[in-house]
Length: 265
Image 1 (cartoon, rainbow, N blue to C red):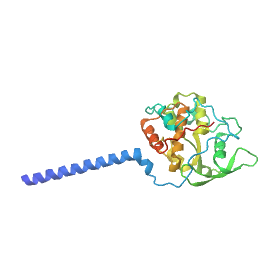
Image 2 (image 1 turned 90 degrees about the vertical axis):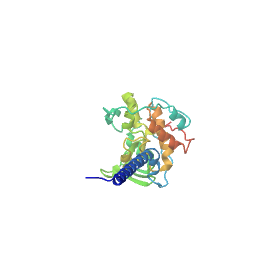
Image 3 (image 1 turned 135 degrees about the vertical axis):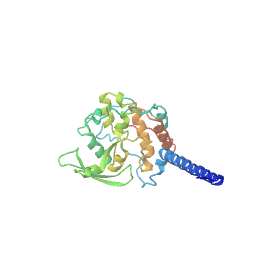
Image 4 (image 1 turned 90 degrees about the horizontal axis):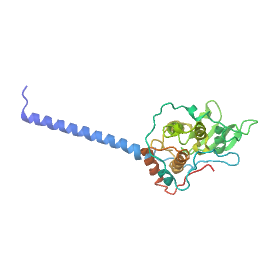
């Protein structure tokens, strides 16, 4: 079959146009992904209900602080962040919850396990089980991650609606220095009130083992406190951050440069 020169040139032009469209589409996709994993997650959720600007840390009337390996640096969270090492993630091999000790121990020896301590700390109008001053069966609070009013009712199904979140997830900690901690230090990290917040169950499941680069509370009013709390925990336990995580933290703290570190003292 004979193809005329003009037909050949038209085919070449259409081919070049098709390739240009493909390249443009690929560039747009890459740019969109880059936006989401840097700034996008800060805006993707849209406006959130007005919620708490901070979460409780310690009620000294009946809780005792956990012994941390290092003191939380005084001053701004930004300054403390600059003192934290920046490294890549270590392999997630050999991770297990048991590496951080039995779940919800009474590490501060106040007679109540950690889960009930945190529920009592964070909920209002707390109801205890009959004959107990520890076992929380009901309460309510303005949940910090979503900003919504949430009721807690103990039960085989209903208890999951309110979970205790590790601010620095244990899986994240394992890949950023916790493998090098001793068993007692890992146990402290898992039960430290500084690292624990009662949270909406669905939000906690969505966070999973994410760090600040992959998950932030929908309640934007809490983000400065939340990031400062992560920085404080990582400084106290000698954990590191990734470069992307540090960038995300600095972006949050850019709106509140005077935000101080947080302690459970």
